[in-house]
Image (cartoon, rainbow, N blue to C red; front, side, top):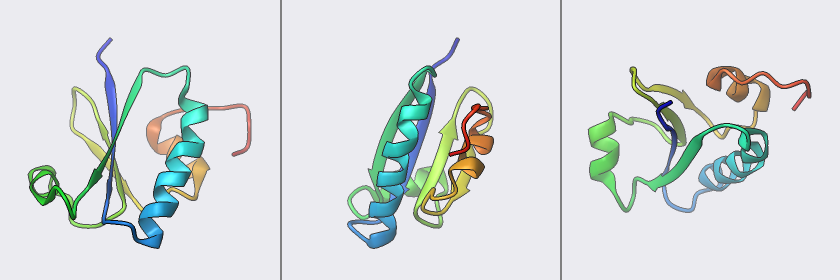
Length: 94
């Protein structure tokens, strides 16, 4: 099985970036049984990576896998929506 990569693109230390990072950290507990690698990319420091990936808004969470990457924009506060986006079903109501 190929490793799945979650990339969170943020813009510096903005309030939205901090919220997205914290929410991703909170979601990570629900991803423990999954084979996810998580990367956080600050587009202020690495704009070339955002350009290569076609990122036009931050924060953006990109799910990279063997197929076409999928993206969700926002601070990841709607955990149910993020889990659905990732295709993860839990018995809990996040």
